[in-house]
Length: 211
Image (cartoon, rainbow, N blue to C red):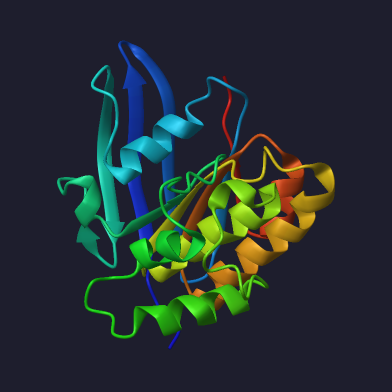
């Protein structure tokens, strides 16, 4: 069953000392991708850190982060229901591919092995369960990272330039896979990037930040 989560950002303002880095007001519905674009230093990654709950102490932030109507701003990072996809896949090197996917599954899930096998089949990696992540290509690692995120059943997703380290040939393919999966899952998502092609493939609204 598709989720129907909604993420609202109300009067968000992030500062570094007296300097206002960004101000943002937005609502992201189920399956929508909001793209925030801007050059390095414009506050894109700082915004994600604030939403996810690990903003560095030198920054000051105010505003409300509402997930399904609940203000999650005071919750610790692990209780916010946010899934994150970074530039690097960040697969656990000491776990197999199956181990990495199983790590994302909630403890209450029965028959994890079957869920993992199905997940691998869904991303075109059937038979890869016992592989060492180090033996995977960049595109394969990115697909495993995406599926691990989806298996963790987040309520919203934050994307921190997840395609920037893929070669040009793979980027469009991975964008289609990632954005398609997020839409199918009904997850509100926020993408930060400096790549206009990311925004075009995301297909949603775009907010541009100045320096």
